[in-house]
Length: 426
Image (cartoon, rainbow, N blue to C red; front, top):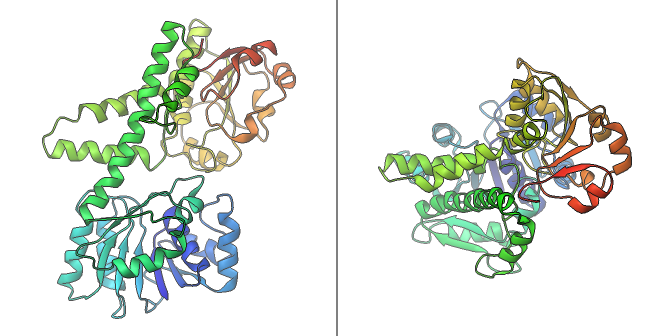
């Protein structure tokens, strides 16, 4: 089938690659000539394990053709996917008005936005006199493991009215829906709201655990023991119970903010979700507060190493990452910052342009630790899990480990001669 995918998002890249891999002819339209040039050179926009190779394979095979929006001639297609940046309703409307061909049977909106966008886009199609059916397939991929969460999903939300488009949509999703039926069919609004509600409950679990971690420090309780006990209760489960130094990224935070905005618009009391966001913003500075208390406020001129600045492992992106607020707090107190991250240093360099503060980007974790008065583990990349502790201790000026993700054993680390503090651990 001829398919067009519009967008320069990770969702667009995953959708285009996955559909091409299953035999469809996919034209992927991106918004800028720079992105188009990268794709024509065989370089994907987003680098994730396995996804780079699959993109290159489909591009080389000719099943995935990069196109430039508003320049490349529109190809006749049977299905159009809109996988634009969040809150791009106006752009989606323009694309439908200018790019939709007579042969298009189905428009699939994957773009995350306020509840009601899909209905408005559908009304726009009807006003144009188009017979194409519009369905909603909200983006549920998890960055860092995006391809697997699309091709082997635990759940897919499909918004379609009166069964319109469901048969064709199920056929498109059939290669990814074989183990069990993971497609949940509902109305357009219900699909959009379900996406936001899922993000809200996940964020709430994280912030709740961070509150419990803060309390456990006062009570002399190890939050990790409590976490395991909570996860063993089948009413609760294990997911998203890890305390840490806050969540970030372009998805979870913006989705919770979208829910809060809707609550404000409807004159409801948004107390819980607003508190979730406030808790998360406070938590982004928890390692700075521990550092400040350890040195009793005498931190000016000291040097801090940070391991990991991406908002989660597996991605090079730093949008809303906890490390950014942490770095700004350190800079405000005259602290020098040295950073290592396996993938995110280029994005961090762009973010740091024009900002005041000492920042050194390091090639190795041990380069970052040289002469450091503290090491802060912020993003739990696998290469950080088992360092050479004696080498690390030798590199640092003062061997203080501040573990923002509780990935280390406190007893073991202290036995190596380092001072250790985690989140909610004695």
